[in-house]
Image (cartoon, rainbow over all chains, first blue to last red; front, side, top):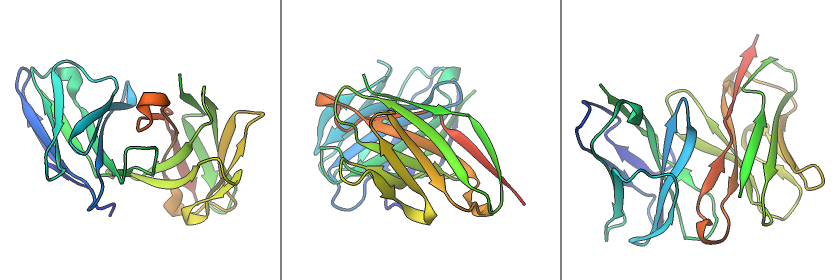
Length: 113
Length: 115
């Protein structure tokens, strides 16, 4: 158990819908990272937040957005969902903003029908 | 740009045999390199990391990796495979400059252990 929690574990929704994925980092960790894992794209970095502010951005679609709240939990919002958004979404956390070990949560499996 | 290439998407090893997973990297800055393992239906777990200290890095579960700058490689080994080593293994390199936190992952290597 990494100490990073993600909810929900599974999510099934329809195209065009909007969903919110939630992540609670390890106690004391200030950085939160979001990754997408799909069969065709592999593991892709989406976005990083550090202490409430966006720190780095990767291959995140404009339909996707994220935020980190004062209590340091983070949410990833996916809107206008398409079939291709079906994937495993991981959250990771680390103590600071500089390169350190990232601890991964168990992931949220999203299925768009 | 930072990138890693994992040679071989599937590796089959016999129980008790050497496990060797290959990873080559490309980095415009001194690299930080990582190996993660993903068991079925689970998240990623860190096996080991290289952060410019010793070139031979020991990790959990008997795994180790050697950083070779001249070969731009960071291969993962384990002397004797165990059935519990069956999983997918990912090599990753950190981002650079303003993207320090970004991990760039390889495509992964699925390890099958046969009795």
